[in-house]
Length: 294
Image 1 (cartoon, helix red, strand yellow):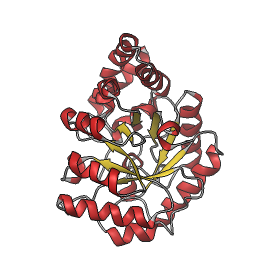
Image 2 (tube, one colour):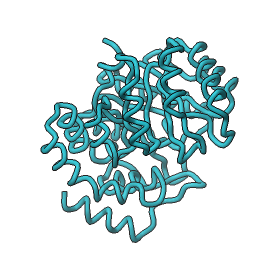
Image 3 (cartoon, helix red, strand yellow):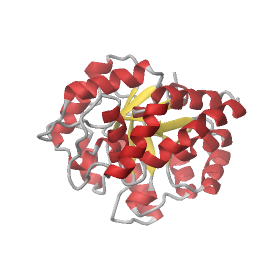
């Protein structure tokens, strides 16, 4: 099965639950994994930024991936996040992070460095050529400080064999439509923005790698499947019910919102590692009230 077929639908960017002493809570991570799979997500992403990867040690990353592979036990596909602004280091990570059960690698573009478009191309080319697994680009300029232009995405898609898709979270619908119009037929394009996933799927995207699907997996994945089936009116009604959730989940920072929601659902404790802090009390109260009504 090709990647475009395998990863069609909803992927969930898993949180990393912590205990009160800020050690990783593997029991809670296991509960979240079982919860999202039981409620219909098509695949999972481990070591995404939603998992607070900048605060994880290398050994913790290895342990999380091994635990995730073992817990999922091939029930759904798994992709692994490996990214950074040191190209040599992330190439070396290919030999350190367990990838035996991964279908692909999601790699966010370099942050802070703000490379040129040629620099972005060469960064991804070097990474893809060193990888035995397909690479999915991750464009999130609000976090990295640099957009991967549509022309660069399309150049990578056409010229680098191991570049298999993109998670697009730039928020520019015109850029999304240009990529969708001009991409190779087998190039995977998924949304990286829960609040825009519905209209982006209508435009032709293959699904979404979601934060909200940690806490609202059943309704969110149903919305995505319905939109992919071109049942637009029904999908819109489902998405309308989730708009308030998107507001609370992303009001302050990610994953503070979704961790608060998972706490209210009884799946994890509400702890984050600095510099992130839990959702403020006012928004948490509104999120709790929303969850109580659904």
